[in-house]
Image 1 (cartoon, rainbow, N blue to C red):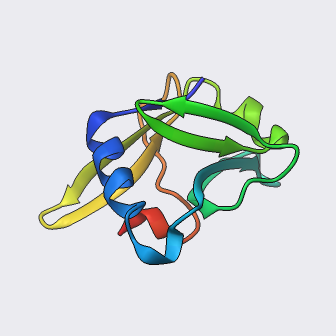
Image 2: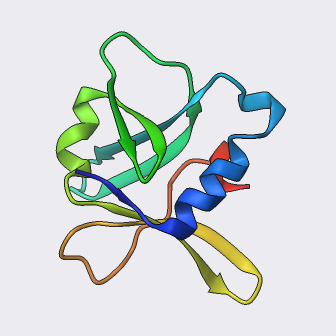
Length: 109
């Protein structure tokens, strides 16, 4: 379903050590807007009853069922966008252009 690169997993593990996210799990979300574009987001959250749980590259993930179809084959990476500007990106399958998460992410620090 989802892939997480080693670089992204390392940064997520570091972010998970922050005191304000202790006991939370990384939620990955995706939705399609009115124009048909798929938007991605991620952040630490509490588990909800209907969540799907996965472990990918040693990272526990929460995914709500409405996000599942949009996350098939997506890769999450952590890359340098420009000198000194490191960010998480979502790479959809068969896409030449990665997507940055839409919302501010606790995990992005």
